[in-house]
Image (cartoon, rainbow, N blue to C red):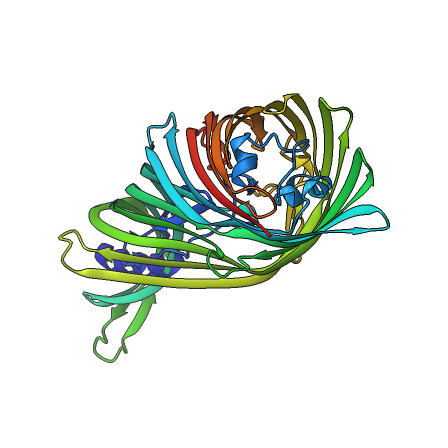
Length: 584
Protein backbone atom coordinates (compact mmCIF):
# COMPACT_ATOMS: atom_id res chain seq x y z
CA UNK A 1 0.00 0.00 0.00
CA UNK A 2 2.84 2.39 0.80
CA UNK A 3 4.31 2.03 -2.72
CA UNK A 4 0.94 2.63 -4.36
CA UNK A 5 0.35 5.80 -2.36
CA UNK A 6 3.77 7.18 -3.48
CA UNK A 7 2.89 6.82 -7.17
CA UNK A 8 -0.42 8.58 -6.66
CA UNK A 9 1.26 11.58 -4.99
CA UNK A 10 3.95 11.90 -7.70
CA UNK A 11 1.32 11.90 -10.46
CA UNK A 12 -0.63 14.68 -8.71
CA UNK A 13 2.58 16.62 -8.07
CA UNK A 14 3.62 16.61 -11.76
CA UNK A 15 0.33 18.29 -12.66
CA UNK A 16 0.41 20.78 -9.81
CA UNK A 17 3.81 22.39 -10.25
CA UNK A 18 6.22 23.61 -12.97
CA UNK A 19 9.34 25.48 -11.91
CA UNK A 20 10.94 27.71 -14.59
CA UNK A 21 14.66 28.07 -15.12
CA UNK A 22 16.33 31.41 -14.45
CA UNK A 23 17.98 33.19 -17.37
CA UNK A 24 20.63 35.88 -17.46
CA UNK A 25 20.83 39.17 -19.33
CA UNK A 26 24.07 40.98 -20.06
CA UNK A 27 24.19 44.72 -20.67
CA UNK A 28 26.54 45.92 -23.42
CA UNK A 29 27.16 49.67 -23.60
CA UNK A 30 27.53 50.96 -27.16
CA UNK A 31 27.65 54.42 -28.68
CA UNK A 32 24.12 53.73 -29.87
CA UNK A 33 22.84 52.90 -26.40
CA UNK A 34 22.72 49.85 -24.15
CA UNK A 35 21.92 46.41 -25.55
CA UNK A 36 20.40 43.74 -23.29
CA UNK A 37 21.57 40.30 -24.39
CA UNK A 38 19.58 37.33 -23.09
CA UNK A 39 21.97 34.36 -23.14
CA UNK A 40 20.69 30.81 -23.79
CA UNK A 41 20.27 28.35 -20.93
CA UNK A 42 18.57 25.07 -20.00
CA UNK A 43 15.46 24.28 -18.03
CA UNK A 44 15.77 21.68 -15.26
CA UNK A 45 14.25 19.20 -17.73
CA UNK A 46 17.12 19.85 -20.19
CA UNK A 47 15.27 21.92 -22.78
CA UNK A 48 17.03 24.92 -24.35
CA UNK A 49 15.43 28.26 -23.52
CA UNK A 50 15.67 30.34 -26.71
CA UNK A 51 16.92 33.85 -25.88
CA UNK A 52 14.64 36.79 -26.37
CA UNK A 53 15.57 39.30 -29.05
CA UNK A 54 18.13 41.83 -27.92
CA UNK A 55 16.44 44.91 -26.54
CA UNK A 56 17.81 48.29 -27.56
CA UNK A 57 17.25 51.81 -26.40
CA UNK A 58 14.41 54.06 -27.48
CA UNK A 59 14.50 55.53 -30.96
CA UNK A 60 17.39 57.93 -30.70
CA UNK A 61 19.80 59.92 -32.87
CA UNK A 62 22.51 58.04 -34.76
CA UNK A 63 25.23 60.36 -33.43
CA UNK A 64 25.90 59.99 -29.72
CA UNK A 65 29.64 60.54 -29.28
CA UNK A 66 29.35 64.35 -29.46
CA UNK A 67 27.45 67.02 -31.25
CA UNK A 68 28.21 67.03 -34.98
CA UNK A 69 30.85 69.74 -35.12
CA UNK A 70 30.82 72.54 -37.66
CA UNK A 71 33.41 72.09 -40.38
CA UNK A 72 35.74 75.02 -40.97
CA UNK A 73 36.10 76.34 -44.50
CA UNK A 74 39.17 77.49 -46.39
CA UNK A 75 42.93 77.15 -46.12
CA UNK A 76 43.39 80.86 -45.46
CA UNK A 77 40.94 80.93 -42.54
CA UNK A 78 42.19 77.66 -41.01
CA UNK A 79 45.79 78.78 -41.32
CA UNK A 80 44.70 81.52 -38.91
CA UNK A 81 43.14 78.89 -36.57
CA UNK A 82 39.69 80.19 -37.54
CA UNK A 83 40.29 83.72 -36.25
CA UNK A 84 38.77 85.08 -39.45
CA UNK A 85 35.66 87.06 -38.47
CA UNK A 86 37.32 90.46 -38.75
CA UNK A 87 39.51 89.44 -41.73
CA UNK A 88 36.98 87.66 -44.01
CA UNK A 89 38.73 88.70 -47.22
CA UNK A 90 38.19 85.68 -49.48
CA UNK A 91 35.21 83.77 -50.82
CA UNK A 92 34.85 81.67 -47.66
CA UNK A 93 33.65 84.85 -45.95
CA UNK A 94 30.16 83.60 -46.89
CA UNK A 95 30.50 81.11 -44.04
CA UNK A 96 32.68 83.14 -41.63
CA UNK A 97 31.28 86.68 -42.04
CA UNK A 98 29.27 87.55 -45.16
CA UNK A 99 29.90 91.24 -44.56
CA UNK A 100 33.52 90.72 -45.61
CA UNK A 101 32.60 89.74 -49.17
CA UNK A 102 32.61 93.42 -50.13
CA UNK A 103 36.41 93.27 -49.97
CA UNK A 104 36.43 91.10 -53.11
CA UNK A 105 36.88 93.49 -56.03
CA UNK A 106 36.98 91.15 -59.04
CA UNK A 107 35.09 88.04 -60.16
CA UNK A 108 36.74 84.90 -58.91
CA UNK A 109 36.29 81.17 -58.51
CA UNK A 110 37.77 79.11 -55.70
CA UNK A 111 37.91 75.63 -54.30
CA UNK A 112 39.12 74.08 -51.03
CA UNK A 113 40.14 70.45 -50.54
CA UNK A 114 40.40 68.89 -47.07
CA UNK A 115 42.21 65.83 -45.72
CA UNK A 116 41.77 64.98 -42.05
CA UNK A 117 42.63 62.28 -39.56
CA UNK A 118 41.92 61.60 -35.91
CA UNK A 119 43.71 59.50 -33.30
CA UNK A 120 41.79 58.67 -30.12
CA UNK A 121 43.42 57.00 -27.11
CA UNK A 122 40.78 55.73 -24.69
CA UNK A 123 40.96 55.00 -20.96
CA UNK A 124 38.49 53.37 -18.61
CA UNK A 125 38.75 52.11 -15.04
CA UNK A 126 36.87 48.85 -15.39
CA UNK A 127 37.61 45.17 -14.89
CA UNK A 128 35.07 44.16 -17.53
CA UNK A 129 35.86 46.63 -20.32
CA UNK A 130 39.03 46.98 -22.36
CA UNK A 131 39.69 49.95 -24.66
CA UNK A 132 42.66 51.02 -26.71
CA UNK A 133 43.18 53.39 -29.62
CA UNK A 134 41.23 54.22 -32.74
CA UNK A 135 42.31 56.09 -35.86
CA UNK A 136 40.30 57.16 -38.88
CA UNK A 137 40.75 59.43 -41.86
CA UNK A 138 38.61 61.22 -44.42
CA UNK A 139 39.04 63.63 -47.29
CA UNK A 140 36.97 65.50 -49.79
CA UNK A 141 35.90 68.77 -51.29
CA UNK A 142 35.49 71.27 -48.48
CA UNK A 143 34.35 74.37 -50.36
CA UNK A 144 33.93 75.88 -53.79
CA UNK A 145 32.44 79.16 -54.88
CA UNK A 146 31.92 81.74 -57.56
CA UNK A 147 32.00 85.47 -56.75
CA UNK A 148 30.61 88.37 -58.77
CA UNK A 149 31.24 91.94 -57.51
CA UNK A 150 29.25 94.77 -59.10
CA UNK A 151 28.43 98.41 -58.52
CA UNK A 152 25.00 100.03 -58.35
CA UNK A 153 23.95 103.44 -57.10
CA UNK A 154 27.53 104.33 -56.26
CA UNK A 155 27.71 101.39 -53.88
CA UNK A 156 29.70 98.19 -54.11
CA UNK A 157 27.80 94.91 -54.01
CA UNK A 158 28.97 91.31 -54.12
CA UNK A 159 26.99 88.18 -54.93
CA UNK A 160 28.43 84.71 -54.48
CA UNK A 161 27.22 81.15 -54.75
CA UNK A 162 28.95 78.62 -52.52
CA UNK A 163 29.10 74.97 -51.62
CA UNK A 164 30.40 74.11 -48.13
CA UNK A 165 30.80 71.23 -45.74
CA UNK A 166 28.71 72.18 -42.71
CA UNK A 167 28.75 69.37 -40.12
CA UNK A 168 30.88 66.26 -39.88
CA UNK A 169 29.67 62.94 -38.35
CA UNK A 170 32.88 60.93 -38.78
CA UNK A 171 33.75 58.63 -35.83
CA UNK A 172 35.22 55.18 -35.13
CA UNK A 173 35.33 53.23 -31.87
CA UNK A 174 36.27 49.72 -30.74
CA UNK A 175 36.17 48.02 -27.34
CA UNK A 176 36.14 44.60 -25.70
CA UNK A 177 33.93 43.52 -22.81
CA UNK A 178 34.18 40.55 -20.47
CA UNK A 179 31.10 39.67 -18.49
CA UNK A 180 30.83 37.03 -15.77
CA UNK A 181 27.84 36.28 -13.64
CA UNK A 182 26.43 33.62 -11.38
CA UNK A 183 22.87 33.33 -10.23
CA UNK A 184 20.89 30.97 -8.07
CA UNK A 185 17.20 30.37 -8.40
CA UNK A 186 15.48 28.53 -5.56
CA UNK A 187 11.81 27.77 -5.68
CA UNK A 188 9.50 25.59 -3.61
CA UNK A 189 6.11 24.19 -4.54
CA UNK A 190 3.60 22.16 -2.55
CA UNK A 191 0.88 19.76 -3.62
CA UNK A 192 -1.55 17.50 -1.90
CA UNK A 193 -3.09 14.23 -3.15
CA UNK A 194 -5.90 12.39 -1.35
CA UNK A 195 -7.56 9.08 -2.08
CA UNK A 196 -10.09 6.76 -0.52
CA UNK A 197 -10.23 3.07 -1.24
CA UNK A 198 -11.82 -0.06 0.24
CA UNK A 199 -10.84 -3.69 0.19
CA UNK A 200 -12.59 -6.77 1.60
CA UNK A 201 -10.62 -9.53 3.21
CA UNK A 202 -11.93 -13.10 3.90
CA UNK A 203 -10.78 -14.27 7.29
CA UNK A 204 -11.86 -17.68 8.66
CA UNK A 205 -15.63 -17.79 8.91
CA UNK A 206 -16.13 -14.08 8.19
CA UNK A 207 -15.21 -11.01 6.19
CA UNK A 208 -13.52 -7.71 7.06
CA UNK A 209 -14.03 -4.62 4.84
CA UNK A 210 -11.23 -2.08 5.34
CA UNK A 211 -11.75 1.53 4.13
CA UNK A 212 -8.68 3.84 4.05
CA UNK A 213 -8.61 7.63 3.60
CA UNK A 214 -5.01 8.61 2.71
CA UNK A 215 -3.46 12.10 2.14
CA UNK A 216 0.05 12.65 0.76
CA UNK A 217 1.63 16.10 1.18
CA UNK A 218 4.51 16.64 -1.24
CA UNK A 219 7.08 19.46 -1.01
CA UNK A 220 9.34 19.83 -4.03
CA UNK A 221 12.34 22.17 -3.96
CA UNK A 222 14.34 23.21 -7.02
CA UNK A 223 17.73 24.88 -6.67
CA UNK A 224 19.23 25.95 -10.00
CA UNK A 225 22.64 27.62 -10.31
CA UNK A 226 23.52 29.39 -13.58
CA UNK A 227 27.06 30.56 -14.26
CA UNK A 228 27.56 32.58 -17.46
CA UNK A 229 30.52 34.14 -19.20
CA UNK A 230 30.40 36.59 -22.10
CA UNK A 231 33.23 38.00 -24.21
CA UNK A 232 32.18 40.82 -26.53
CA UNK A 233 33.98 42.72 -29.25
CA UNK A 234 32.34 46.03 -30.16
CA UNK A 235 32.89 47.93 -33.42
CA UNK A 236 31.27 51.31 -34.03
CA UNK A 237 31.59 53.01 -37.41
CA UNK A 238 29.96 56.31 -38.28
CA UNK A 239 30.26 58.59 -41.27
CA UNK A 240 28.40 61.33 -43.03
CA UNK A 241 28.17 64.99 -43.82
CA UNK A 242 25.64 67.75 -43.68
CA UNK A 243 26.59 70.18 -46.40
CA UNK A 244 25.00 73.27 -47.82
CA UNK A 245 24.51 75.35 -50.94
CA UNK A 246 24.86 78.95 -49.87
CA UNK A 247 23.95 82.01 -51.94
CA UNK A 248 25.40 85.10 -50.26
CA UNK A 249 25.05 88.84 -50.75
CA UNK A 250 26.98 91.80 -49.32
CA UNK A 251 26.66 95.57 -49.62
CA UNK A 252 28.97 98.44 -48.79
CA UNK A 253 26.87 100.66 -46.53
CA UNK A 254 29.60 103.28 -46.09
CA UNK A 255 33.27 103.31 -47.08
CA UNK A 256 34.04 101.84 -43.63
CA UNK A 257 31.00 99.66 -42.96
CA UNK A 258 29.65 96.69 -44.89
CA UNK A 259 26.99 94.11 -44.16
CA UNK A 260 26.03 90.84 -45.70
CA UNK A 261 23.89 87.78 -45.42
CA UNK A 262 23.89 84.20 -46.62
CA UNK A 263 21.13 81.64 -46.91
CA UNK A 264 22.31 78.11 -46.11
CA UNK A 265 20.29 75.38 -47.82
CA UNK A 266 21.31 72.23 -45.97
CA UNK A 267 21.14 68.65 -47.16
CA UNK A 268 22.69 65.29 -46.40
CA UNK A 269 25.56 64.62 -48.74
CA UNK A 270 24.54 66.86 -51.62
CA UNK A 271 27.41 65.57 -53.77
CA UNK A 272 26.55 61.92 -53.14
CA UNK A 273 29.87 60.89 -51.62
CA UNK A 274 29.35 60.56 -47.86
CA UNK A 275 25.79 59.80 -46.64
CA UNK A 276 24.98 59.78 -42.92
CA UNK A 277 25.30 56.20 -41.74
CA UNK A 278 26.26 54.45 -38.50
CA UNK A 279 26.75 50.79 -37.65
CA UNK A 280 27.32 49.29 -34.22
CA UNK A 281 28.27 45.60 -34.21
CA UNK A 282 28.69 43.49 -31.07
CA UNK A 283 30.20 40.04 -31.61
CA UNK A 284 29.98 37.88 -28.51
CA UNK A 285 30.72 34.36 -27.38
CA UNK A 286 30.42 32.61 -24.05
CA UNK A 287 29.22 29.67 -22.01
CA UNK A 288 26.38 28.89 -19.64
CA UNK A 289 26.81 26.21 -16.99
CA UNK A 290 23.58 24.99 -15.40
CA UNK A 291 23.43 22.90 -12.21
CA UNK A 292 20.04 21.70 -10.93
CA UNK A 293 19.22 20.03 -7.58
CA UNK A 294 15.67 18.73 -7.09
CA UNK A 295 14.52 17.44 -3.71
CA UNK A 296 11.10 15.88 -3.21
CA UNK A 297 9.70 15.05 0.24
CA UNK A 298 6.41 13.13 0.60
CA UNK A 299 4.64 12.78 3.93
CA UNK A 300 1.70 10.36 4.01
CA UNK A 301 -0.89 10.16 6.73
CA UNK A 302 -4.43 8.81 6.98
CA UNK A 303 -7.20 7.10 8.86
CA UNK A 304 -9.10 3.89 8.43
CA UNK A 305 -12.15 2.03 9.68
CA UNK A 306 -13.34 -1.51 9.14
CA UNK A 307 -16.57 -3.48 9.44
CA UNK A 308 -16.46 -7.20 10.25
CA UNK A 309 -19.08 -9.91 9.81
CA UNK A 310 -18.82 -13.46 11.15
CA UNK A 311 -20.68 -16.20 9.27
CA UNK A 312 -22.22 -18.82 11.54
CA UNK A 313 -22.76 -21.99 9.47
CA UNK A 314 -26.05 -23.98 9.65
CA UNK A 315 -26.21 -26.76 12.23
CA UNK A 316 -28.73 -29.52 11.66
CA UNK A 317 -32.09 -27.94 11.10
CA UNK A 318 -30.84 -24.53 12.19
CA UNK A 319 -30.04 -22.18 9.30
CA UNK A 320 -26.78 -20.22 9.21
CA UNK A 321 -26.66 -16.49 10.02
CA UNK A 322 -24.29 -13.46 10.10
CA UNK A 323 -23.08 -11.79 13.19
CA UNK A 324 -21.89 -8.17 12.60
CA UNK A 325 -19.22 -6.63 14.79
CA UNK A 326 -19.12 -2.96 15.79
CA UNK A 327 -17.16 -0.61 13.42
CA UNK A 328 -13.58 -0.02 14.47
CA UNK A 329 -11.69 3.22 13.59
CA UNK A 330 -7.94 3.95 13.68
CA UNK A 331 -5.12 6.08 12.16
CA UNK A 332 -1.99 5.20 10.24
CA UNK A 333 1.32 6.29 11.69
CA UNK A 334 2.67 9.04 9.30
CA UNK A 335 5.65 8.07 7.18
CA UNK A 336 7.97 10.08 4.89
CA UNK A 337 9.76 9.41 1.60
CA UNK A 338 12.60 11.72 0.43
CA UNK A 339 14.18 11.59 -3.01
CA UNK A 340 16.94 13.83 -4.45
CA UNK A 341 18.40 14.23 -7.92
CA UNK A 342 21.15 16.36 -9.46
CA UNK A 343 21.81 17.21 -13.08
CA UNK A 344 24.09 19.58 -14.97
CA UNK A 345 24.63 20.80 -18.51
CA UNK A 346 27.11 23.11 -20.24
CA UNK A 347 26.20 25.19 -23.29
CA UNK A 348 28.38 27.30 -25.55
CA UNK A 349 26.98 30.13 -27.62
CA UNK A 350 28.15 32.77 -30.07
CA UNK A 351 26.32 35.53 -31.82
CA UNK A 352 26.23 38.94 -33.42
CA UNK A 353 24.04 41.96 -32.78
CA UNK A 354 24.13 44.73 -35.37
CA UNK A 355 22.32 48.05 -35.18
CA UNK A 356 22.32 50.15 -38.34
CA UNK A 357 21.08 53.71 -38.60
CA UNK A 358 20.72 55.61 -41.84
CA UNK A 359 19.53 59.17 -42.28
CA UNK A 360 18.10 60.26 -45.62
CA UNK A 361 16.30 63.21 -47.15
CA UNK A 362 17.69 65.72 -44.64
CA UNK A 363 16.65 69.30 -45.34
CA UNK A 364 16.90 72.58 -43.50
CA UNK A 365 17.76 76.20 -43.93
CA UNK A 366 18.97 79.17 -41.95
CA UNK A 367 20.71 82.48 -42.43
CA UNK A 368 24.18 83.77 -41.60
CA UNK A 369 24.41 87.51 -41.03
CA UNK A 370 27.57 89.55 -40.68
CA UNK A 371 29.06 93.02 -40.57
CA UNK A 372 32.57 94.40 -41.05
CA UNK A 373 33.64 97.80 -39.71
CA UNK A 374 36.94 99.44 -40.57
CA UNK A 375 37.38 101.59 -37.50
CA UNK A 376 40.70 103.03 -38.69
CA UNK A 377 43.65 102.17 -40.84
CA UNK A 378 44.94 100.04 -37.97
CA UNK A 379 41.78 98.48 -36.50
CA UNK A 380 38.96 96.48 -38.02
CA UNK A 381 36.03 94.80 -36.26
CA UNK A 382 33.75 92.01 -37.40
CA UNK A 383 30.60 90.38 -36.10
CA UNK A 384 28.58 87.43 -37.37
CA UNK A 385 25.65 85.32 -36.23
CA UNK A 386 24.53 81.94 -37.54
CA UNK A 387 20.84 81.59 -36.72
CA UNK A 388 19.36 78.41 -35.21
CA UNK A 389 17.72 75.98 -37.60
CA UNK A 390 15.82 72.72 -37.75
CA UNK A 391 16.94 69.74 -39.81
CA UNK A 392 14.14 67.40 -40.87
CA UNK A 393 15.08 63.92 -42.03
CA UNK A 394 13.99 60.32 -42.36
CA UNK A 395 15.83 57.88 -40.11
CA UNK A 396 15.74 54.10 -40.41
CA UNK A 397 17.00 51.86 -37.63
CA UNK A 398 17.52 48.13 -38.19
CA UNK A 399 18.57 45.65 -35.49
CA UNK A 400 19.73 42.15 -36.44
CA UNK A 401 20.64 39.40 -33.99
CA UNK A 402 21.87 35.83 -34.47
CA UNK A 403 22.71 33.47 -31.59
CA UNK A 404 23.89 29.89 -32.15
CA UNK A 405 23.98 27.50 -29.20
CA UNK A 406 26.22 24.40 -29.05
CA UNK A 407 26.40 21.43 -26.73
CA UNK A 408 29.26 20.82 -24.31
CA UNK A 409 31.40 19.17 -27.01
CA UNK A 410 30.93 22.19 -29.29
CA UNK A 411 30.21 19.81 -32.17
CA UNK A 412 26.41 19.80 -32.23
CA UNK A 413 24.20 22.82 -32.83
CA UNK A 414 21.47 22.80 -30.19
CA UNK A 415 19.59 25.93 -31.19
CA UNK A 416 19.76 28.86 -33.65
CA UNK A 417 17.91 32.10 -32.95
CA UNK A 418 17.65 34.84 -35.59
CA UNK A 419 15.72 38.10 -35.30
CA UNK A 420 15.44 41.28 -37.35
CA UNK A 421 13.60 44.46 -36.44
CA UNK A 422 13.39 47.57 -38.59
CA UNK A 423 11.73 50.90 -37.93
CA UNK A 424 11.60 54.15 -39.89
CA UNK A 425 10.52 57.51 -38.52
CA UNK A 426 10.59 61.18 -39.31
CA UNK A 427 13.10 62.96 -37.06
CA UNK A 428 14.13 66.52 -36.30
CA UNK A 429 17.40 68.02 -35.12
CA UNK A 430 17.34 71.49 -33.62
CA UNK A 431 20.74 73.11 -34.24
CA UNK A 432 21.77 76.03 -32.03
CA UNK A 433 22.64 79.67 -32.61
CA UNK A 434 26.30 80.62 -33.08
CA UNK A 435 27.81 84.06 -32.86
CA UNK A 436 31.35 85.41 -33.17
CA UNK A 437 33.05 88.78 -32.74
CA UNK A 438 36.54 89.53 -33.98
CA UNK A 439 39.14 92.26 -34.25
CA UNK A 440 42.13 92.70 -36.53
CA UNK A 441 45.05 94.99 -35.82
CA UNK A 442 47.04 95.91 -38.93
CA UNK A 443 50.44 96.89 -37.60
CA UNK A 444 52.01 97.27 -41.06
CA UNK A 445 51.16 96.64 -44.68
CA UNK A 446 52.78 93.23 -44.44
CA UNK A 447 51.77 92.24 -40.90
CA UNK A 448 48.58 91.94 -38.86
CA UNK A 449 47.25 90.09 -35.82
CA UNK A 450 43.65 89.02 -35.31
CA UNK A 451 41.50 87.52 -32.55
CA UNK A 452 38.00 86.03 -32.35
CA UNK A 453 35.64 85.25 -29.48
CA UNK A 454 32.62 83.05 -30.18
CA UNK A 455 29.86 81.11 -28.46
CA UNK A 456 27.56 78.29 -29.54
CA UNK A 457 24.33 77.80 -27.58
CA UNK A 458 24.53 74.01 -27.40
CA UNK A 459 21.99 74.00 -24.55
CA UNK A 460 19.34 74.32 -27.29
CA UNK A 461 20.58 71.30 -29.26
CA UNK A 462 17.80 68.65 -29.40
CA UNK A 463 16.67 65.55 -31.25
CA UNK A 464 13.07 64.43 -31.61
CA UNK A 465 11.63 61.39 -33.31
CA UNK A 466 8.07 61.27 -34.57
CA UNK A 467 5.69 60.54 -31.69
CA UNK A 468 8.32 60.88 -28.94
CA UNK A 469 9.63 63.59 -26.64
CA UNK A 470 12.69 65.73 -27.27
CA UNK A 471 15.99 64.10 -26.37
CA UNK A 472 19.51 65.18 -25.58
CA UNK A 473 21.33 63.90 -28.70
CA UNK A 474 24.49 63.11 -26.73
CA UNK A 475 23.06 60.51 -24.33
CA UNK A 476 19.44 59.95 -25.38
CA UNK A 477 17.96 61.26 -22.11
CA UNK A 478 14.96 63.61 -22.11
CA UNK A 479 15.96 67.14 -23.04
CA UNK A 480 16.77 69.09 -19.88
CA UNK A 481 17.57 66.06 -17.71
CA UNK A 482 21.30 66.28 -18.44
CA UNK A 483 21.52 69.81 -19.87
CA UNK A 484 24.39 70.75 -22.15
CA UNK A 485 26.42 73.85 -21.44
CA UNK A 486 26.84 76.61 -23.99
CA UNK A 487 30.38 76.55 -25.33
CA UNK A 488 32.96 79.30 -25.84
CA UNK A 489 36.02 79.61 -28.00
CA UNK A 490 38.89 82.09 -28.28
CA UNK A 491 41.28 82.22 -31.26
CA UNK A 492 44.25 84.41 -32.10
CA UNK A 493 46.55 84.46 -35.14
CA UNK A 494 49.00 86.47 -37.19
CA UNK A 495 49.94 86.81 -40.84
CA UNK A 496 53.17 88.17 -42.29
CA UNK A 497 53.52 88.79 -46.02
CA UNK A 498 56.71 88.33 -48.01
CA UNK A 499 56.64 90.50 -51.16
CA UNK A 500 58.66 89.59 -54.21
CA UNK A 501 58.44 90.64 -57.82
CA UNK A 502 55.10 89.27 -59.07
CA UNK A 503 54.97 86.84 -56.13
CA UNK A 504 53.54 87.14 -52.62
CA UNK A 505 54.04 84.50 -49.94
CA UNK A 506 52.07 84.71 -46.67
CA UNK A 507 53.22 83.13 -43.41
CA UNK A 508 50.40 82.37 -40.99
CA UNK A 509 50.19 80.90 -37.49
CA UNK A 510 47.40 80.68 -34.97
CA UNK A 511 46.32 79.21 -31.65
CA UNK A 512 42.87 78.64 -30.24
CA UNK A 513 41.02 77.31 -27.23
CA UNK A 514 37.53 75.92 -27.57
CA UNK A 515 34.88 74.05 -25.65
CA UNK A 516 32.95 71.22 -27.23
CA UNK A 517 29.61 69.96 -25.88
CA UNK A 518 29.67 66.94 -23.58
CA UNK A 519 27.64 65.42 -20.76
CA UNK A 520 28.57 67.16 -17.53
CA UNK A 521 31.17 69.75 -18.44
CA UNK A 522 32.28 70.67 -21.96
CA UNK A 523 35.41 69.08 -23.39
CA UNK A 524 38.32 71.46 -23.80
CA UNK A 525 40.49 71.50 -26.94
CA UNK A 526 43.54 73.46 -28.00
CA UNK A 527 44.09 74.26 -31.67
CA UNK A 528 47.39 75.10 -33.37
CA UNK A 529 47.71 76.11 -36.99
CA UNK A 530 50.30 76.96 -39.59
CA UNK A 531 49.63 78.29 -43.07
CA UNK A 532 51.30 79.62 -46.14
CA UNK A 533 50.61 80.08 -49.82
CA UNK A 534 51.66 81.86 -52.95
CA UNK A 535 50.13 84.54 -55.11
CA UNK A 536 51.18 84.40 -58.75
CA UNK A 537 50.75 87.17 -61.24
CA UNK A 538 49.90 90.83 -60.92
CA UNK A 539 46.98 93.01 -61.83
CA UNK A 540 43.48 91.59 -62.20
CA UNK A 541 44.41 88.09 -63.30
CA UNK A 542 46.01 86.31 -60.41
CA UNK A 543 46.14 82.76 -59.11
CA UNK A 544 46.38 82.22 -55.35
CA UNK A 545 47.25 78.89 -53.76
CA UNK A 546 46.97 78.44 -49.97
CA UNK A 547 47.98 75.62 -47.68
CA UNK A 548 47.05 75.17 -44.00
CA UNK A 549 47.71 72.63 -41.29
CA UNK A 550 45.51 72.54 -38.19
CA UNK A 551 46.11 70.37 -35.14
CA UNK A 552 43.53 70.03 -32.35
CA UNK A 553 44.23 68.21 -29.10
CA UNK A 554 41.95 67.41 -26.18
CA UNK A 555 42.53 65.48 -22.97
CA UNK A 556 39.89 63.58 -20.99
CA UNK A 557 37.40 64.16 -23.79
CA UNK A 558 34.69 62.09 -25.50
CA UNK A 559 33.09 61.06 -22.21
CA UNK A 560 29.76 61.14 -24.04
CA UNK A 561 30.87 58.33 -26.34
CA UNK A 562 29.72 55.73 -23.81
CA UNK A 563 27.67 57.61 -21.20
CA UNK A 564 27.84 56.19 -17.69
CA UNK A 565 30.98 54.07 -18.19
CA UNK A 566 33.50 56.68 -17.03
CA UNK A 567 35.51 56.31 -20.22
CA UNK A 568 37.56 59.29 -21.41
CA UNK A 569 39.86 59.80 -24.37
CA UNK A 570 42.85 61.82 -25.46
CA UNK A 571 42.12 63.15 -28.94
CA UNK A 572 44.44 64.38 -31.67
CA UNK A 573 42.96 65.78 -34.86
CA UNK A 574 45.08 66.65 -37.88
CA UNK A 575 43.68 68.56 -40.85
CA UNK A 576 45.27 69.79 -44.05
CA UNK A 577 43.50 72.29 -46.30
CA UNK A 578 44.52 73.23 -49.83
CA UNK A 579 42.73 76.02 -51.64
CA UNK A 580 42.99 77.67 -55.03
CA UNK A 581 41.57 81.00 -56.17
CA UNK A 582 41.47 82.28 -59.72
CA UNK A 583 40.74 85.95 -60.35
CA UNK A 584 39.15 86.93 -63.64
